[in-house]
Image: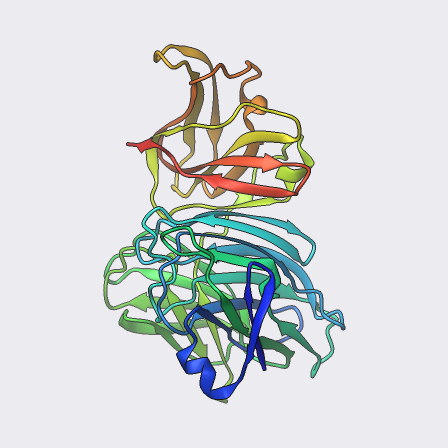
Length: 374
């Protein structure tokens, strides 16, 4: 039985045949089978294409038994790679806000729109289960006109079993040439294991150990981010994983809310980006998230620029490879931003960046996409 919700109000209860003709947004969550200590991905897919412009909601994955030990990352997959968001992760609770400028989010069936990656507790007992679900009352997706979709959600289940598990894919983003190699980390790999990457030819799979595989590609991959990877052992246990960059944070923000914020960047990287962000007011404040996926350190400069184009203040720093940071604008530059001013992120190599607007009273951090990039 599935309950249909619009803006938190139950509209109807539908079953069976009604599922196929539902006029709103139908979401399904795949089942997962993972070993103790393994990595699961909660994969949320649309059952019929519907364009989504923005979304927000809360997810709690605390089950009745201690199966999940942590939530580690959240990814958004859109056809144009322009879905940006922020997940505030507090234990196994998530507050998610996303923004898709192209409004193409939810328009593809071949991939999930959202993955939530977490770790199964090493002490989880085989056979234990926990639901993978989202309460529709806590989730709002808007169509391109800004109207909330009525929603129905088919839940999944995470089951603990001695299954093969993918814990990481390296690289998780960026191009890989013909003949290039990727590394798959995981658990319970066995000799003769099979690897499939959707729409990408695999030339060879080198078994390194029960926790590592090397895969040689028979075709170039423009971007590893969002690639569907399936590993199957000879005894037929398998795991599916959607790759993403596993960067680590540099330091911590002095703002508690930003210490919990996991930025979800658009796929693109820039050497220059401009953001219009509000000045601090009450419990509301702004910030910037920056991520370096390059193999070399990035020399980054954050600037506060007046409405007439005059640089009021700036701060330069180095951001090492595969690192990210989330900071309030006041942690970069203490100068109060005057009306009409903008924040600019410049780098000697392309980096990913995202504006942030946070509110301590609600615990929400919203993404702000750049007004101009280079």
